[in-house]
Image (tube, rainbow, N blue to C red):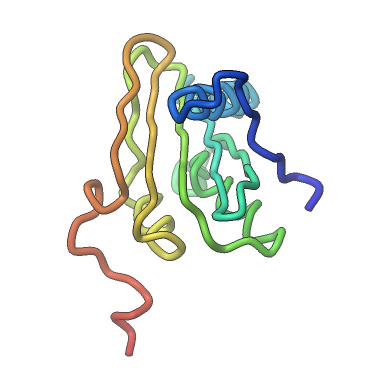
Length: 146
């Protein structure tokens, strides 16, 4: 899995240190975004249950409906590497405030992780810590199909 990275460990070893490291990875991914229309760069760092990190960035398209969000880009990279179980997602943006995942991203994430922990941060200000269950209550998933 050449695209996967092991999570960075801060010498402090605390959970907040690990979240800050993951946010740095997400901010670095945001710099790679292709966002000529919105001018908003978004990066995601998705952590598998085994600790691998998969990054993604938003890729905009002149046909706006074909734009790919950072979160879905990270999921696609992970799935292409054979990984389909996740525990944590960090999302960073160039906006001053945190940008929550859109509805489409929430539903795609739900396919793979009902108990996903999500950390969101803009370029300034505080980080928002939440869960997918809080962002997508009473969700529709694979078990609803039969």
